[in-house]
Image (cartoon, rainbow, N blue to C red; front, side, top):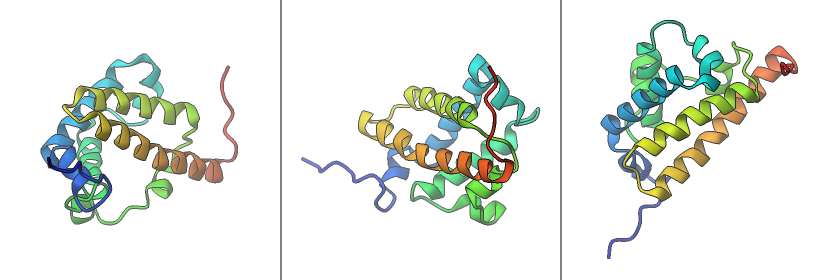
Length: 145
């Protein structure tokens, strides 16, 4: 019996995601859901008309972040995720909408349940950091009723 991969070690997470092709499918589903889900409408508006560049950047980022080739850095240079996203006022509502879209996209993939859970748990960390960086730049964001 082959031992289960240890996600987060080497390229195990990248391989579990299906490599760059799997990540591109995940990202395509993610942005399709962002276009469709009413709770993501405000988040979608932040992205502009075309999602092509955003989709490529997210897939490339996820590749390196999950232990695969550092495609984002090769194509776009280095990125400090929270600092980059701090240019927009991102609060918990937008962060939750992003995570909801990603959770639904992950559920569409042929991932092992353990990897799906691991991936979503790991993605919560940068989303929390992005909210904090935005809060630091824009001050406490008020929630609309």
